Length: 262
Image (cartoon, rainbow, N blue to C red; front, side, top):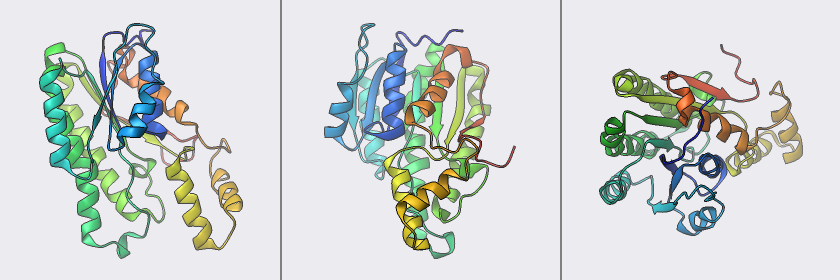
């Protein structure tokens, strides 16, 4: 099975921590030249030192605030004009604040739409010409299992994640003829700072300890544990590889079996 990414260029968003960081490390280990991208330059610089260079890989970082889509557009357009381009794009951004949909103000939806879909779209449009020229492209969106089964108390997130999933499926239909695949990978409960915040919120709302809230969350998962970011990264890296060239337009849960829909 060919999962070699030597000489492939990968842009990994939200790569200063958590799932994005794990994806960057995994892609580099398979030989890719990785460009880290987030708003936290200090954290990105630290991640940069952890990336494999044993195959001569060359890594770099870009900095922009994904809540400002025009800033993202400017940064990526400048980067593409200075490099050959990217065959692999990992779209990944921190989720909106929790809370019921009926209590969210309209600006929360607009902000989340810009943060996720609009910024993602700017990146895809900037990277498409090079992907087409290479006859090879992998667009991988880190979304949520909520696109299959809406999650309680994540009203804005459920709404926007669904929009991104529909956008991605549309792109998959449009870009397949160019050798470009578009897939969504759906993390379940993964051991990251985001999960810590969600559990803390549940503990407060239910007036229970964080330990009890953690145990309750694990009990909703058939495997009775949280995923490690590296386990998620392995799935994303496979979809980025040549071996996954005929897989496109899918939503792949990496959730330990928690999602109850097929």
